[in-house]
Image (cartoon, rainbow, N blue to C red; front, side):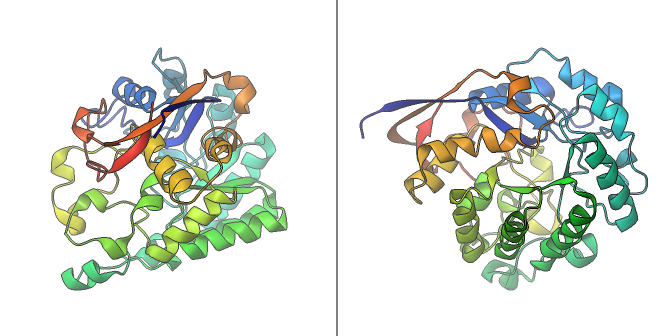
Length: 358
């Protein structure tokens, strides 16, 4: 293959966990930003599931003011403490410069609380980004139904865990006009709900992660928590629908970069933490899945890393003024997770053959 160099507007990852403060042994702002820069990103949106939770003006300002290799635009909590009981001070958080509102990692189960949050976010012209997993439906599940789950007797997560949550939020979106973004979507049924909402003209977007676009639970053979995340990997049909939706412009990309210490990820599906790291391979992995395997237009692929993510960030691309992202495509090489800049290495990409890089 003849090597090529491609130049695109600066890539944005709207879903990363830098664990700062609270679990900096797994990641901190500097190590996370270094990993993001190595992966070709010019800006990232950090999630507020830190300790303490990101529900304060001070938390937002600390990240906005940090001098790092990439721009951090923190999201802020929908509810105080991410407890789902009382809406955060959205007006102050928006004024401080947060990107959007999310309780990522936790679903806001109380309809009345979510309705108030979406009404206030709509008045601010800010997006609500929802972790669409209803815990009542999930009922302790750790994996989607698949041969491995049945062989090991693992409790499964039904697709309705996602779709029930999305349906509730779409109803509230209709009532309020609030911009709604569904995080890390994983099911074919969820994709169809988003498609229908967009056809209806609702201000709704959603994201797909590189790992949900690459792996399927049907192919898992070992009790390896490197493949455990929330939402879980879907089956091959889910993966195919996610890829089609990305190609159609229905979904954008986001990594859900989720670092964990080794001890949190070495106890199998039943007991390990959810999530993988992926900032440093996301460009290569999505290029492989979407451009090489699905024939996606290169410009459309890049748009899913820049223009579409900017839609849900307060201020959008004009305010950010990001440097360009340069992508190099050439000879195949194997991903080496051990060489990454992130503090954590909980990732199933090691050894995967790709052609794109930074």
